Image (cartoon, rainbow, N blue to C red):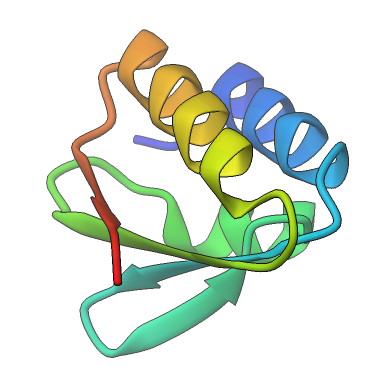
Length: 80
């Protein structure tokens, strides 16, 4: 169950930030700025983890969590 609108919106939102934003799904790590990576990974039923590192990480975490929630995607934003 791949949601094209969600994938495009997630990628566009991530691209606004300079931080590295990586989605972990099972044992795979995907750069969420890569639409192709998201297409092959973002399928229903997974528990995702989002790892954000960089100068605007706090803002990026907040924005990305909102985008995932909007599309009913279960993501755990990792804070370290």
